Figure 1 (cartoon, rainbow, N blue to C red):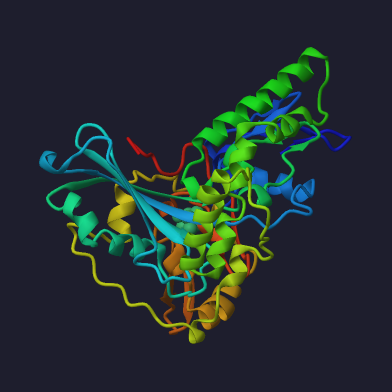
Figure 2 (figure 1 turned 180 degrees about the horizontal axis):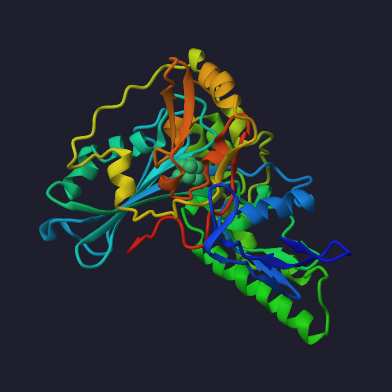
Length: 409
Ligand code: SF4
C-alpha cells in the first residue's frame, strides 16, 4: 500500500521479483513498481490482503457485524456422456455436515460433458476435528451425486474462501483515495450462492463514481457517490432481503431453512421488501472453535482414488507452482503458538482446514512436535488467515505469478 502525506491512498507497489529465501536479492532481481492513481479500486476477492489492511487502517468495519466466511472447494469432472444433462443444476444443503454446521453444495452440468461441483463449509464451525476437504470427498459418495461421477474423470481442483456475512457485515466501502468492490468488500449473496453479479455491479458503481470525480477534477478524496448509488440499487434490495441468512444457521439447519423460506419467499409475497427483524453476528469465525477434548473426533474414510481423493493428488491438478527460492509467504507471528496452543488445545486444526495440506505437524529427531509449513502447495484460499484460532498465521502475496493455475475452473 502507498499513502500520501495526508493519509489518503496514493496507489500500490508491486512486489520485488528475484528475492531469495534469505531476503537478499539474487540473479534476476527486479525492483517492484509503484503504481500511483487518483483513485485506487481494490478487487482482490474475499479477505484480500490489502483490503484487510485498509479495513484496519481506516476502521471501515466500525459498527458493522464481523465478516463471516466459508471455504469453497471445487472440482471439475469429465463424465460419461450418457449421464450428462447440459444445464442441470443441483444444490444441496447440509449432509454430510452435522446440523449445527453451515454448508452445502453445487453441481452444474456445463458443456462438453463437463461437470463443475463444489462444497462450501462455513468457517464458523466449532469442531476442530472437522476437515472441509474430507467432508467434500464424503459428499461425493451420496447416491444422488455419485451417480453422475462414476466412470468419469476428475480434471481440476481448487479452493477459495468466500464471504458470507452479507449486508450486515459490509464494511464502509470508501476511504480517501479509493474503494473496495466485489468480495474484497463482501457483497456475495450467500443465500443465492452467487457473487459475480454483485462484483460486476459494484465495480460499475465505483467506476461511475470515479469517472464523475475525475471529470470534476477531484482526486484522493472519498467516492461517496459509490455507496450512495449502491443503497439505491437492486443489489442493495437483494442483499437486504437476505441479510439474516447466515445468522439463522447459528440456530440450527431446520430453523434456518424455515426462516429463510419465510424471509425470502413468504414475506415478499405479502408485501415486505425485507424482513422486519434483524439478527446480528457478534463474533468472528475463528472464535467459534471449541477445544478438541470437548468435541467428537471425526474419522474420515480413506480415499478410493476414483471418486474420492487425497489432498496432495488434488493440489497436483490445481497446477500450483511457486518460485522455491523466495521469502516465505506464510509466516507465524509466534513460532511457539502452533504446538503450545493449536496442537495442545485444538488438535492442530490447520492440518485439517487447509485444503492443500500445507500445514503438517511432524516429529523432530528429539521426538518433539513441530509445525512444518509446505508453502509451495498453497492454493491461496485464505482459510488459514481467517480460521487460525489465535490469528497467528500471516498470509502475504508470494512472488508474482506464484499460486494455482486453474484451467477451465
Ligand atoms: S496455506 Fe492457507 S491460504 Fe494456502 S491453501 Fe492452506 S489454508 Fe489456503
